[in-house]
Image (cartoon, rainbow, N blue to C red):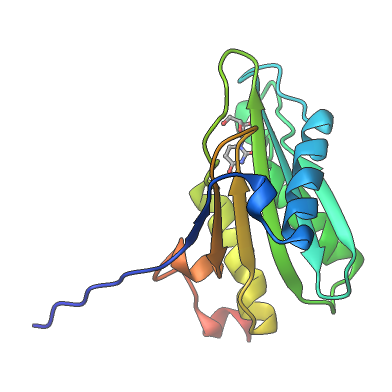
Length: 162
Ligand code: THU
């Protein structure tokens, strides 16, 4: 038997104004994307912005459905739009933010497990780490160098690709 410890690092910025300009811009785009959210059931509006390695930016927001599981998270709307428009271009960075109707979102919003798995797929596809920027409407911003840090031991089975 052996015991393994996984640890990971991330950066915490006191506010988005401390970010490097390209990251601040992407987080602003994620906040803009919130305006497209359709969340009449949860009243929780999420926005995501994806920057590709060629500099193109794609935005997405959560789209809910009366049949709840039919809805989709903002991150997957954004990354699927980017990946289907430019299937050969690696994903460089994903920024995520949210706004709630009933409370202030003043902390970074972490992506759900399915979105982590969806994002990690593009790390595997292109063999690069995807930077993740998480911020609320205000407050601290977290920056992760790679989704692998947020999803250790992500599902992968190379045999499935054959
Ligand atoms: N949501 C996202 O858009 N991204 C996440 O990573 C977590 C949750 C959405 C789904 C649903 O529309 C609302 O937030 C409440 O769960």
